[in-house]
Length: 119
Image (cartoon, helix red, strand yellow):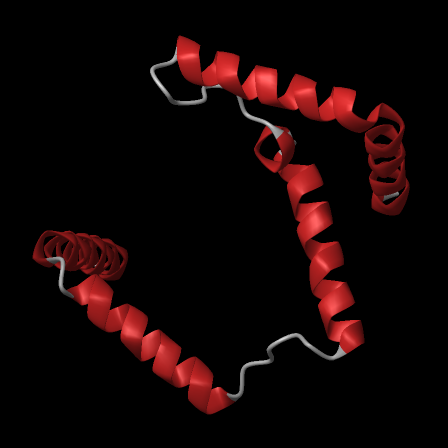
């Protein structure tokens, strides 16, 4: 399905030639001028629904695997990546404090429920 969408888009681009380029440039200029140099409208991938984005991304992943160029993690790489992520997250003391607080509340609540069930 995405292949037909791509072909349709390529066909439109080829048929419109320079007119298409001029329209895109004028659209870009009007977006920039009206918003102080920033775009406000979502275009392309950003404008698509999350489901459509996932569909396109998964097609890219499948294609990469079929071509043999996709990266596949081994257990050592995954371990190192997880460790690196953990180190970065743990630098945020406020975040870690909140995690500990929630864990304590959870286990404390569980302890109270267990006492009620026993008695």
